[in-house]
Amino acid sequence: MKKTLYGIPNCDTVKKARTWLADHGQDFAFHDFKKQGLDRATVASWLEQADWEVMVNRKGTTWRKLSDERRAQVVDKASALELMLENPSVIKRPVLEGAGPLSVGFSDAQYGAMFGSGKA
Image 1 (cartoon, rainbow, N blue to C red):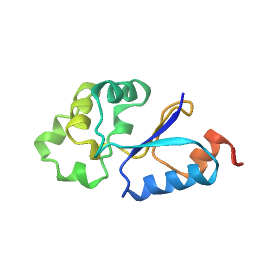
Image 2 (cartoon, rainbow, N blue to C red):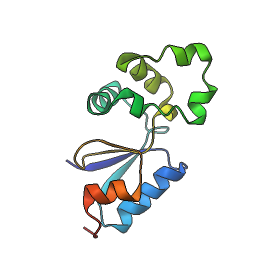
Image 3 (tube, rainbow, N blue to C red):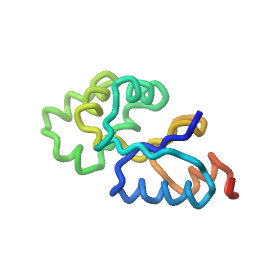
Image 4 (spheres, helix red, strand yellow):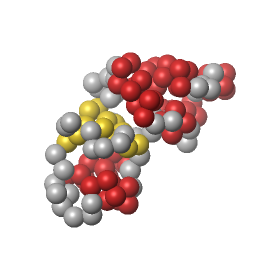
């Protein structure tokens, strides 16, 4: 399966992940979910692989800008799916698919463990 990194290009964490992958010789496609969108099947697949509480970034600006009422409605996988489709920016970034188990977020250690610390 081809590796796909999902995110938005101006996100600092996404930039770090893209740089790490390129510097370590990893071939991947970048999917800008603000411009290219996300379909229900993709997001539903992610939620089968990762807990919705991991996928929804409750520390980000998008979450904080939601009304208290809207935030209170996000209580399970189904409600998280709807929120993620309505507001893709609420998704914790980046999401890396096709490199083994779904990876959410980025750190040098996390990617190093997935790919080995050496260049591919």
